[in-house]
Amino acid sequence: MRLVVLALGVFALLVVAVAHAAPAAANEDGGYQPPVAAPVADPFRPPSSQYGPGNRGLDYNTAPGTEVKAAADGEVVFAGQVGGTVHAVVLHGDGIRTSYSFLSSIRVQRGDKVRQGQVVGTTGAQPFHFGARAGDAYIDPALLFSTGPPDVHLVPDSERRPQSEAHERSGLLGMLVGLPGSAAGAAGDALGVGADALDWAAAKTVDVAGASASLLGRQATASIDQFRTTWEACVEQFPPVQAFHFATAVAALVDQGECTPAHVQPAPVQGHVAVLVGGLGSRGDQRDPRAGAAIFAVDTRALGYKDADLYRFSYRGGTVADNPYGKADTEVDIRTSGARLRALLEQIQHDRPGVTVDILAHSQGGLVTRAALAPGYDRYDPTLPQLGAVVTVASPHQGTDGATAAAQLRRSPVTDFELRAVRVAAPHQDDPRATSIAQMSETSGFIKDLNRHPLPAGLWVTSIGGREDWLVPASQTHLAGAHNVTLAVPAVSTHDALPRSKEALREIELGLNHMPPTCQTLLTRVTNTVVPLGVHHAEQSLGHTVTGGGLP
Image (tube, rainbow, N blue to C red; front, side):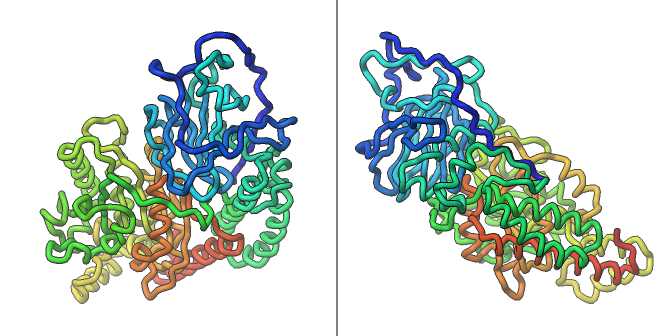
């Protein structure tokens, strides 16, 4: 169950004194510079009350696609989505936080050190908003550009270091409250509430688990009523364990969390390389590099990658171009495959030092990727490249029902012999006794150990599941710490069709831009939760029958 706390806090009791002194400068060579070269459409207009109307920054009249640059040197303390819109926040040496809001794409991530003039993102159709805060108090950003005696903003030492993401996000939410008409409407639409509800939402502390309230106020109360009906219809259909998971999913659905509105279009990546990792049963062939693995069919050109910047991982080590692999190579210990992938990453860093690497993985490839990073990933490790984003598609992060059933069948000499016979009769099919299949059992020590390793700090990970995927139900693709999304891609084999679908392509592109998954309607989220749970439950029931009730 999830506790969502929205704490905007009152304006800090800081001393914001006016003094005739040198400019408040973040850079030794000239202080702050405007983030865009465009006219100001709406100047700073401080609100009359904490949540009253006003403009807590500068709105610029920018064309879509305009590059937004850091106003001064600093550290990125927030980069992502708030209220359905995309923002970045940079903390400067003097304690001032500058915010860059309503972006269409973002080029930085939390923890990045940026220089003045470095591009942090690009603008969209909505006016670009530039804000500045001294502690929790919004100040006129125009003062930062002054060449005369400016205001000196005294910021406590405690505010001159990065705070939690929740704290940084709360400052941005304060800016959303009371925005001028069009911007407030856009923020309200993105949140799914009217602009008049933003003031109410801004001051609420929410306990979704207790179902007492939610970030969206009265709308969430109506959502809970809808869930009650759904729950009463479904609870009797699930055994206790599934009922618990369903209840947890319901709580998550009430609070969708961060999402990207469907009209927001992410930008293609620039200057990155991509490592593509296939799944179980895939192959890599020099003659047709796009064939043999579902992930190889992703439209990488549409994502912004050049063909020369693609590295198709070989399960034998290196890349497919240098070392083709076959189906049997994917059935070895996943930890061995992970070590080979890590070696490829090290080779890329050696050959192209400083390049940013994105990893796109399908099915078992997601586990191989996690195994490669499990020994530890430090973005400042000179032997490893800078990872931009990791996207896994239909990856069994919680194991698979089929592998669990195979593991159970191997416990009996009789059924283990039958599995050997299946392998002999169908040599072109996956070996049910393969090491990697055993590791993908829901109860395997490998899966348990892997899930004890948290994702590397600061790494943006997106996990995509297919609602109709019966090989790896979307309930099994959920990964703690990642941005999880379930998509409806009906096909004969959703598992293989998912990576090349237009729906997945958008979510991959969002992940590469460090943007959360696309916002979904309440009905879609309910369906995307119930259907995979139903598939998972049906497969478990079938597994119980096949193994004589031996499945846990």
